[in-house]
Amino acid sequence: MRCYLDHNATTPLRPEARDAMIAAMDIAGNPSSVHTEGRAAKSIIERARGQIAAALGAEGADIIFTSGATEAAALALRDYGISCAEIEHDAVTSWCDTSLPVDTNGHVRTDDPARSAIQFANSETGVIQTLPDGLYMSDMTQAFGKLPIAFNWSGAQMAIVSAHKLGGPKGIGALIVKRGTDIAAQIRGGGQEMGRRSGTENLIGIAGFGAAAQAAARDLADGAWERVEKLRNILEKAIEQSANKTIFVGNAVSRLPNTSMFVTDGWKGETQVMQMDLSGFAVSAGSACSSGKVKSSRVLRAMGLSETQAASALRVSLGVNTTHDDVMQFAETWIAHVNKFQARNGANR
Image (cartoon, rainbow, N blue to C red):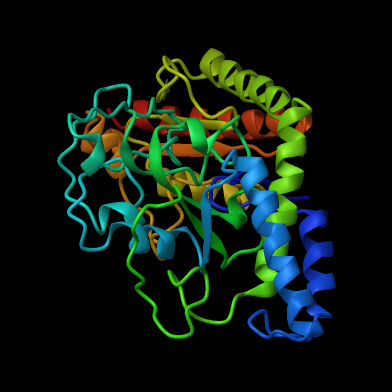
């Protein structure tokens, strides 16, 4: 029986999203057509837009659907001369100069918010940022659905989000833009999405995104993530008691409730991932968006950890369906592996 503990990479499809997607498959019309079938398709898109706006606290903002957060980042950042920190996702650093400073807790500082992009929460460490007023853009991909967010009060002019991080389908995301903000289209053609992103809309993906956002908001209101945070803390306590040389990254500051990244110096993250995979657990050594490559964490290096430490990290990210048994079985298995590593390491000295 496998145990999935890599929810920051992608979260399993919610049943609400699956149902909405199946229903959308039966809609024949093109959303740009004015006949009855076209209007039916358009109504699904506008309903999803409203669901996402309500879940994200973005009522009144423009929600521009894209193929994912990566495309949304390109739409927001390309050729605009924005600065960010090294801890941002590759989708952001690819378009920015990475000159913003990062402290040892993973917090970012900027003296020019209007020319800066700062993530709401880090995908690897879970560290949460305080966003300055007037910020150009924030990557809210990991925080959306896990934290009570109000885009309208966040201080950011724009934000990027992705459906598959909160139980929606892969291949659909959005750029959230404060109304009146000027954004030049990168994909031109039919003028869909308010002229910002042309191309016939991904009706099925959008329907799933809206339903997932609505369900995620319900979980958040019901306290699901408070329960997850308790499980994360139980996991860390179990590991801390048995592996006192392992350090937890970002645990001195506010983090996502589901995320734990820990470092056992010298024990390669990729080795840990493979060993835990063979033991039935899906975990990660960091961001999943590197074409399957496992390498030392750029985020940890930016926070001041050594190259060896940055290559010795493991990330466990829980979901709303993670159980106490899942956490304890993982802890027991990981501790058995770390004990073997330490025994070998000691014998080789």
